[in-house]
Image (cartoon, rainbow, N blue to C red; front, side, top):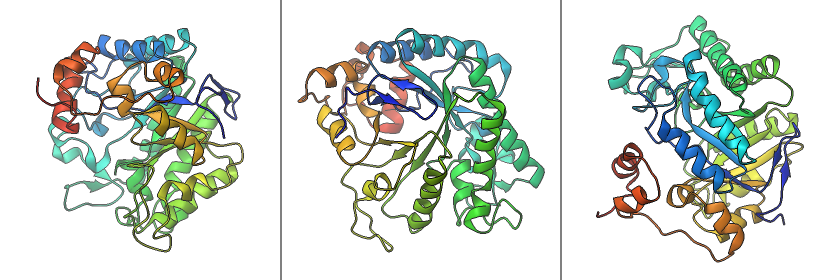
Length: 360
């Protein structure tokens, strides 16, 4: 079994100094125009100094109509490059790799921020009011993801992670419920995964051979389409199509509730697949050295730390020094997060959206 302190090499020969990576975390602290703020730089600086081997930004939207969060980081315009470059430099100065998470909210973009008439998805959606993208708009969306990756590389990042989780636009294209398109980007699983494949192929062609491509997917034991998602992951693994997966589970004990895999441990269905050269990372309720090590024991190559990194910026140093280390569990007083260096905007988000903040 690999240990948390063990290094790891990706297929691109990029080197992770340990098995603990910073998960992409929404924080709503960038400047209003999407440029990186001083709070963004401080967030990266603290976690880079705290020992993480790979730092991934919060979700950065690739088109202006894809914005899901106020004060969201952007990567759809060249004006965003300068601030992103400062974030990449911080990671590298501390010996960490740096990645940008590429995002488009689709039907889960914020109507307040972009206007309800701008909501788009693979198909018309009555509940959200989103309209179906035209064929040329799908191609524009593909090209926007590729252009964003080129900006990330130009800013000095080692790679990107595609946000294919939580119902955002890449998730929606994969879903037979949300994608009912009659053209080549809909229909069977091959059609619904075509956009994702074309984005990855385009990034490979536009960026250098050492540029890493990751893909985040959310796993749910209540998803009736889980077998199809597993087939997509298996095909990508067989082809070495991406350099790593970031698989999000609620916790390591969740079991499948429906379908042919009912009763099986959810994460094991994916970490047990043949991986080839692709690395598999898992994001979950990681708030202790033991839970991180257990993730490796269940077949993950490395661990994405989210909640633990919010509580302690030096989660890695603490976990590597003490196998019994465990963070305090939220909710915690607002003063605790302020004292840990979280920005007022981030503390507000932790309070209103995540329930991380208690009294104080």
